[in-house]
Amino acid sequence: MRSQTIHMPVKAAVIACCLFFALFAAAPAFAEETVCLQCHAGQPGHLSEPIGLWEMSVHKENGVSCHDCHGGDPTDFAMAMSPERGFVGVPSHEEVPAFCGKCHVGVKEDYSASAHGKALAAGGPNCVTCHGNHKVKRASLDLINQDACSSCHDYGRAADMKEALVATDNRIAALEKELQALHDKGIATREMEGRLFALRNDFHRLFHSVDVDLVIEKTAGFQQRLDEIAALASADQEDLGQRKVVGAVIVVLLVLAGILLLMLKRTYEGGD
Ligand code: HEC
Ligand code: HEC
Ligand code: HEC
Ligand code: HEC
Ligand code: HEC
Image (cartoon, rainbow, N blue to C red):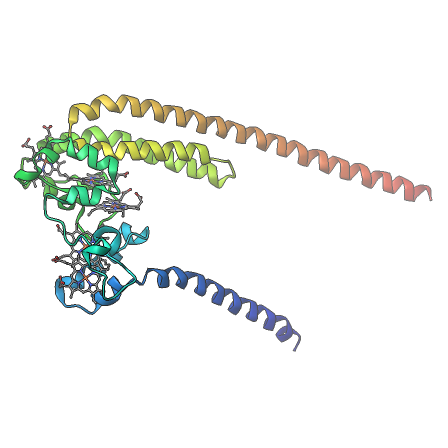
């Protein structure tokens, strides 16, 4: 009996929590249910295929949906694909960089100035050649590989490019881990994380220049900025050590005070 009276409120609380979270998890899903998704889900073949691919993408994860790329009106069934509502349809090979570049402005600039961008009209690779169209994943240097980079020219220069980028990439990853560890210990790492994030972004768009000399030239600058962030992190690590010592001293003092109080109490009671 007794145990039941204790468990009932606990059960109710658990159920309430579950409902609460279910509602919150479902809310954004409802918000994303556009007419584009609703109608295309019922279309055959190449008209519904994009949905499944897009669902695995970094774009879906970040709330970038069909209409954000293709334009149109995601709230109006009848007018959804009307050019008057901004629908741009499917970009041609040459239109793709501007299509993606309306959001990825910096990458598009670097790409357009590169050997790849300049060869676009002659069949050079565009954004989709390397990243795919609907199943765009988070980018990494793994995108540079024999399969992806040897259909138009030999892999040699792609390999040189990769080699020039890998060392800095590894250092960024190591520093990210270090900051995470500091963060887990309760150190405020927001400013360092912000600087590392900015550096990471600058660094990862550098690839699009496909210019090995430029990458090597810029690597020194990146290494210096990384050194500065690493120095901040190790200063905080030391600070943490000092805080531990101070903490230990406080504990010892508290214990001593306790013993002292106990002894005082004893002498007082003894004298009674
Ligand atoms: C009422 C159903 C319906 C809605 C709503 C709808 N589509 Fe479509 N969509 C279609 C059909 C059917 C086709 C193929 C025939 C055509 O191109 O008109 C198509 C074709 C497309 C194409 C390929 C066009 C081409 O030139 O090959 C794209 C891209 C597209 N839709 C995106 C969207 C986007 C983005 C939205 C929302 C803003 C949307 N659609 C809303 C039914 C729909
Ligand atoms: C990140 C931008 C982006 C998003 C988001 C996106 N598309 Fe596309 N879509 C493209 C690009 C780029 C192409 C051109 C394909 C190519 O060049 O390979 C395309 C092509 C298409 C086509 C023509 C495909 C074919 O085989 O004829 C359809 C249909 C389409 N998209 C529908 C959709 C629908 C529906 C959604 C939402 C689930 C969507 N797209 C989301 C970029 C996007
Ligand atoms: C409406 C704006 C928009 C358009 C158009 C768009 N993207 Fe994105 N893209 C985003 C956002 C937002 C993110 C997620 C934020 C981030 O991490 O950069 C993202 C992420 C990415 C990433 C992963 C970045 C990373 O850090 O690894 C790649 C790669 C990418 N997009 C490629 C493309 C390609 C290719 C196209 C064209 C087919 C495209 N995007 C069109 C907004 C857009
Ligand atoms: C669709 C064809 C195509 C694909 C795929 C392709 N490239 Fe290229 N690449 C070119 C063309 C065209 C040029 C410029 C003409 C030339 O130098 O041969 C070029 C030039 C280059 C250059 C030399 C740039 C310079 O300034 O000399 C590098 C480096 C390069 N590509 C790297 C890569 C990497 C890395 C990949 C894979 C991620 C890749 N390419 C995939 C077509 C392609
Ligand atoms: C020749 C192949 C190739 C082409 C063409 C290409 N990319 Fe990339 N992209 C890559 C590679 C490889 C990386 C990863 C670079 C790295 O990790 O340093 C990348 C990284 C990215 C990122 C992530 C940058 C970040 O901040 O982490 C975005 C976004 C992106 N590309 C968008 C685009 C867009 C938009 C276009 C067209 C204007 C494009 N890419 C053209 C291969 C390509």
